[in-house]
Length: 434
Image 1 (tube, rainbow, N blue to C red):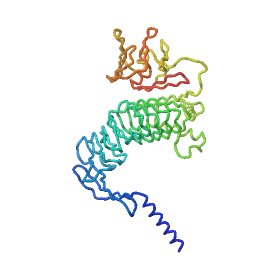
Image 2 (cartoon, one colour; image 1 turned 60 degrees about the vertical axis):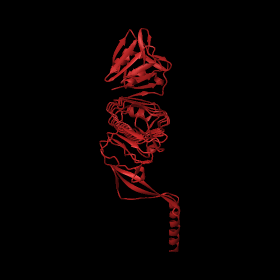
Image 3 (tube, rainbow, N blue to C red; image 1 turned 180 degrees about the vertical axis):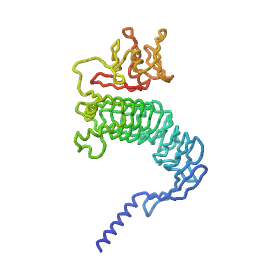
Image 4 (tube, rainbow, N blue to C red; image 1 turned 30 degrees about the horizontal axis):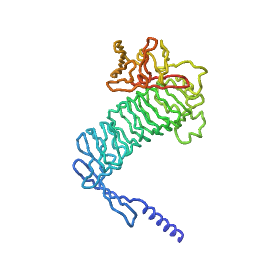
């Protein structure tokens, strides 16, 4: 009995010591009103149990107005607004933009997941959050990308070099996103990051990437190919599930597929059975580039409709540069050439094979290629290409060789939203497009 009381006394002392080392918070349950905003008052106690400061803050729990542009106020009822609750803007189809005040420092990550949001902006004096010209929300120093508005006109997006982490579901259902370039330093793409981006065609992954989470590219129905960097070590189950246009996957290393805990203890014959789940509901997948001794190679060999091409075997001799478009090798009347590290090919052949109409102006030595609602213009010797009036710098300009006009294959293909990969061991350009 005495021993039990002694243990209880020690336990109480430890609990008191633990509580004294943390901030103690209390919440009031009464919902208050201030115009179109509903809020709660939070009492936050800073310090230990004997000596502390009481601070009262407001949590925005609901916006009930009909405005399309909403500014989160710095105060509600005279209290600073520090937190935005997860249902603050739920089911409000009128909102197009939201501006955060300088006092906001806590946001529930799902709060901005509604279909019509076009931009999130942040007061310049807010040290906790920031935004960019695309209306994307970041933390203060832009090392964490938190959320992209689903209705933002993102187009071809290059993320800032400062970004080191992308939040889960950050681009989920951003239907206007067509291309994404992720900077070096990002090591993980977590679950559902790009799920439902139905117009995403081009994905450029960095060599720092280690892990691709489950459902990361789920239902990206316009994605035709993906180049997995050699740095990637794990791809989770269902990462590309529902990417119905996916035809080509290029593995540049010995990537594993991670369906569940205990993967490393499973024999290869069982691990192979989990790989199809990563690409579940990808009926057009037909080519896998992978190391000869990899699980991906075993997966390809287990499926008669998927061709495996080894990438870790050097060619015995130089065979020239080959170009494959949607799995078919393209024949040129003038061989592709390399200039300053860029591959140039005859313009008419490349444009026609990616479905573009072409016009040649002999007076100005200008080229115009059009596909659907996208038009690009180039000029012989000019390092600037225009796409729908937007200028794009070229590392190597078009040139004339053996009476044929050659254009930089990556630049023109990506300008028309085709995905381009270079496999150095095979001296091969792989292009996929819709």
